Amino acid sequence: MTVTKIEAFGKNRYRIYIDERRAFVLYKGELSRYKIREGEVLGEESYREIVDSVLVKRAKLRCMNLLKSMDRTEWQLRQKLEQGEYPQDIIDTAVAYVKSYGYVDDISYASRYIDSRQQSRSRRQIICELQQKGIEKDVILAAYEEKEPVDECALIYRLLEKKHMEPRAATPKEKQKMYMFLMRKGFSSSEVSKVLRGGEYDFC
Image 1 (tube, rainbow, N blue to C red):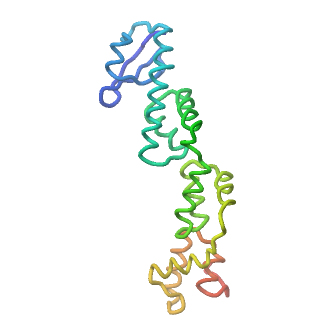
Image 2 (cartoon, rainbow, N blue to C red; image 1 turned 120 degrees about the vertical axis):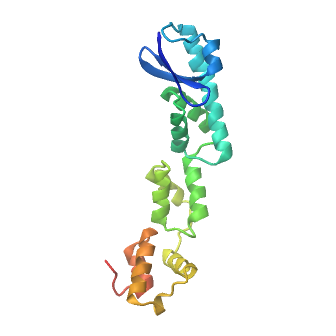
């Protein structure tokens, strides 16, 4: 294995290319420790130590530090490690490590997310937000199965009250504005119409 290129990557970090392919990122001191120089051979023993010890340990610590600052989904954690340009097998190992201790659990994440938002957001909006965080829809639906159903019409009333919107006293133009506001929140047309017009007809 020949080190074909070394390039700066942030403060005191360097991308290492081996045989013309990007391999990993190391700190400046590690270049000296493993005698990594452009055009020189990197021995198998040194390569394995870098991958199996240095990078695995660093990726695990990175995961732990990320999870200390905030709860994250598996996808979000993988995204962060990818931004640090860890090799995919290192990412898999680090994520498997934190998952084995229960630090990352997408169904638990989805359950907590639903609990904290279902009194202010529609089910559809919450599902969309969780999918954007990389959680599969079947996992989200499994989390919802543990929850008591929310009366979304009652939720719509509460949201309108917060906005100081009163459907019964509103003009058609004001109702149209309410309708668009509620649709952006992910409520169904039928639920919105039921609240705004007693189900007589909708705006679609």
